Length: 181
Image (tube, rainbow, N blue to C red; front, side, top):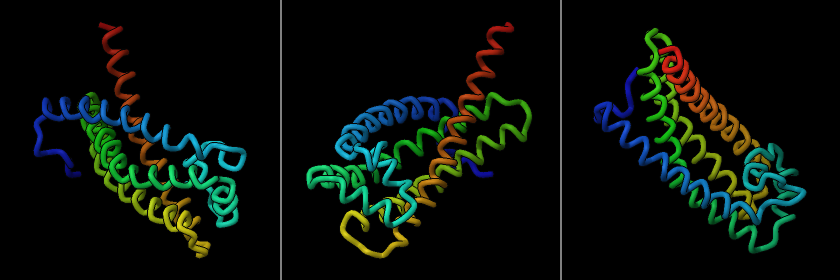
């Protein structure tokens, strides 16, 4: 499996990870701010509820529950997400690569490289999901947009969770090693 950041040595990857991690946190706060007006009984988790609406009827109910200001914030948030998806996917990919060095078994190490490469799929999935959500926000009546958003959001979330789980597993391994030393 190809290391998507092979142009950086290990030390540069670590520095880049911490830089991207900080930016990811900052962007996450901005995304929470932009999503806050979308939270209501129809969309209890704001934009995440919209991403996972799954059906045109559910998506339309959410859109209709938002006032014009909330819809504008949702649209701005989806636009901003095109930057965010590059940042968080890079952070997770770098985390997976760094974590892969903590495993001595080649198979476990390769999983980290695979998950790092899979973050490209995460970013593309998030991008396609955003297109579908923007189409819905702009009033498209094509019902498949909601399904497209849903399935690409699911893929995105599975890959994000897998990457974060791998990194956390590595951190637990490092902590256990240091306790045993």
